[in-house]
Length: 351
Image 1: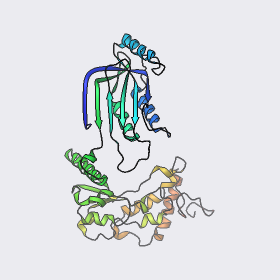
Image 2: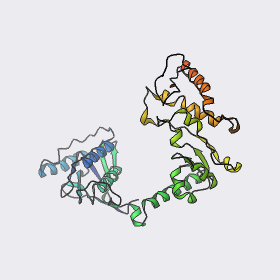
Image 3: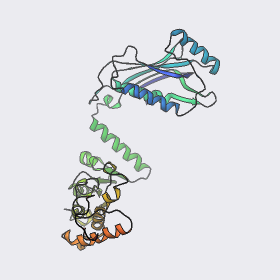
Image 4: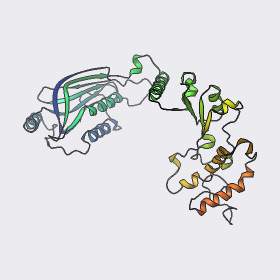
């Protein structure tokens, strides 16, 4: 909820030529942030609806502005909101820590020319105001007009963290712990990225499953704290890291330095991740295979039966790669890094 809000009971109709004005604003919008946000807002509130009203451009002259309202009254019997004026005090548009994102939004209900008004310290406060304004607009399926209810309307809002003297870290912790409690209350299991454990692990619910992705050595700390863990450290099990060969996938052991049998049971398994920034339809299969198969053998083989040296696996994995090719799956050769071409002529097993 906003920090403060007051409202009336009148309904306004938005002009189909609803416009943005920046009278008495110190912000020049040289990068177009504000204008783009306004256009995006209008696209959202119109949502593809065919508006019935076709009011004149309210920016031509005051007499036309008055005619705009008169014309609207004949069609909808509602006063018309011609646009929104946004006044921003600071010309700066650099988003820094601690920047003022507060805003004041006022929607009048009387006057010959009705403009909503936004006052904000920075453009980022103005962006929040536009988002709030968009949520106040509704499409009337009977009159085929956009409407805003509960005018006159006054809203003042600012980030909650400033009031509670909280840092960003405090807010992050509060959000995570609050979300955990909500999920648990509905009977859900909760999985967190490892950052939550690294930053405030002692505050996490004992039901938390920690997804280890940043690096090695985290799983042993997680299970020592009595929490469950999924291992997926990016330096070994992220397929979009094209410079990681299959040997490293195979050698990545989730139970490294975890000797207590009870703690080992807290390692639920592992995950090989394929993110989209390095692939498209032309190379996804050879990015995944056969490296994912190397990790799969590690996860499916009893620890005591695993070969000590990945070279013992090479021939078997090469044969599996050949089987994948025969089935139309474009698995990459084992030699070199991911997605390399075959280095030698010969059968697919030898490549």
